[in-house]
Image 1 (cartoon, helix red, strand yellow):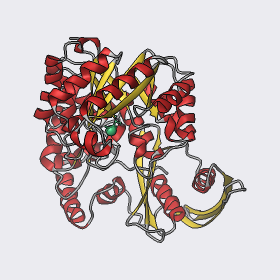
Image 2 (cartoon, helix red, strand yellow):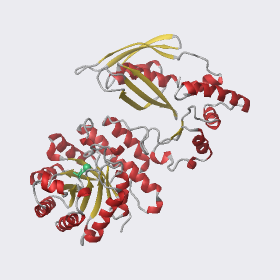
Image 3 (tube, helix red, strand yellow):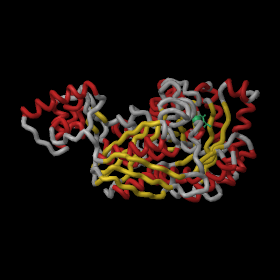
Image 4 (cartoon, helix red, strand yellow):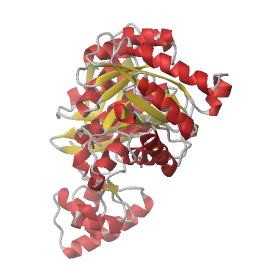
Length: 497
Ligand code: KIV
Ligand code: ZN
């Protein structure tokens, strides 16, 4: 059996079904183009019959990308299949993904049918879809809770009808890894024509086992994985692309390969998170803010001696510049010394001991210690006040006006005012600040989070800026999200001026 595992990305279909994550067509094209750079084999671009917007997105994505196969979802219904085929008319390689439920819940309750009739409907849908495209994938919805013998009959029938890929979804995220793997193995061993199609995994994460189930499926013979970036998807989400790809990459012993360019993972994850307004949890595997951050003294010491002591992945391999050593009360001398060296301070042992003592006192009262705090501790920077302070600002925005902002800053004691326009009020305010402080910085990340729910809630803004390879973070919190944004930007910029 070939060891290439095809990566089928469904961020734009299963991921996009999440409330609040809907994208417009332009945003979907942006994600699709990045998925193409990432190297996915298939992009599931939407469910064309579900809305004119979804139809249009499938059309436009088909025009915008050329390498990946573009896939459109349907039910086992003629009209769905016709509409999907129409939406795929510009795709260089188009695939129709049709299917029906095969578990007792679906057969008897949802569809009010019986097992033989479901097979007839499945076969008819695949044959009909094959009249429009050569590549037809069939999904056996709720295969995770479907009986294996019956599932094998369904799979044999749809392959006989022309399915090129057969998807075995654990729709409710119910299976254990051993159970899901055994299901795939059962199909590999009991479906006579199984070699005529590729078996695909499609796992949901309701019990937190989506990645484990997917890998178990691959180990037992599946050669396509259906995944989303950041594990986005209904309820607890789908299998995370980054987790499966990196597990395959780290475990050379498994001897599988994908065509994913792992260095594009972080960029793609950030794009999806920003456009879908879905922050990634800090401790999320591979793409979380803390995935390569070391905070305990023992770990920091180990990583500084040899990265591999506590890291199985080189952060650079997934597009992260470097692992970070977060200075907290649990950090040891080695981490402090390293950070000070990065900042340009080579201290004698006595001076380092003194700074370390003061560092521990400060770290007990502060969550983490910034570079600026260290400078104060070392005694090179005694200023209580920032060089950059917000005096006042005003923004103008609305449906039919060009967003503009006027910002007044106290910059080294001088009061300076500038006005700028932008794509939105935040962009305008940042541009006005840039006019006052002409350092060429790049805005790497801008993240807004509400502390609790409600429009009168405090908004927290994180900003990441970079200048000549140096990266700084800024933070602001206010009930007014624009004020929080400006504060966060100035907080970061102050560290560069
Ligand atoms: O989870 C599922 O069963 C699905 C199918 C529509 C493929 O998303
Ligand atoms: Zn799904």
